[in-house]
Length: 269
Image 1 (cartoon, rainbow, N blue to C red):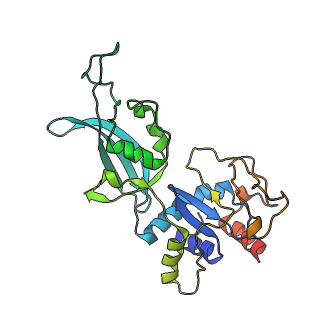
Image 2: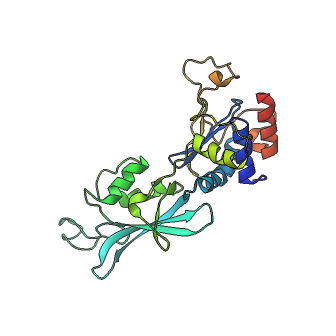
Image 3: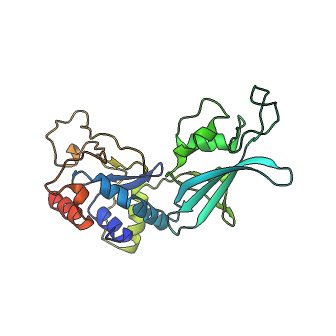
């Protein structure tokens, strides 16, 4: 990006835009009701989330992978989730207890025999199940099918409390959430009179999906005529697809930060 994240965040909030992080994703509610280019969002999402987390004193941890093994003197099964901080690039990890042996005898092996490398199963009351529920992801059909679902965590942004060294307290892991009011107030403390604080997300929020996941097609909000384009009440809920976007005379995907912000501000004037 051509502008530092702090400066960009200040400009967005000072203009009255809604900026928040919900479920580990950036939500932007333009005061001008102008659509936000999907390319611009993808290029700036992590930097803005990182700055928002830094300002509010939270970790912003991107899930990057997992490993399965047997740990400790008793060789207890465990799955290790690996994260990387968006703020400083530091690596973190969390370990959840799991089983790496078969629960019952099948044609594939006897009960108690090792599962294939990389496979694991969960107990009905495991902390990993609680963690998975906090992500809002769909539960797999069985407790031994999580091995096939771990890719769904990739690119998600979490927060959690340090335990010791680079280890995180597994029970504290959750998708990052930062409310707009809290974020604006933190910046307001450092720049008196510059930022207008509004409560919650204003209508017209734009959701940024995690990298690699397709964004939904543009939609008209219910109850609003398609040609209404100005004023907060006319913003509606706009969700942009990365491909096929049609907008301003200069295509949004070709606009720089400055061009997009200038267009944004001219529509707000």
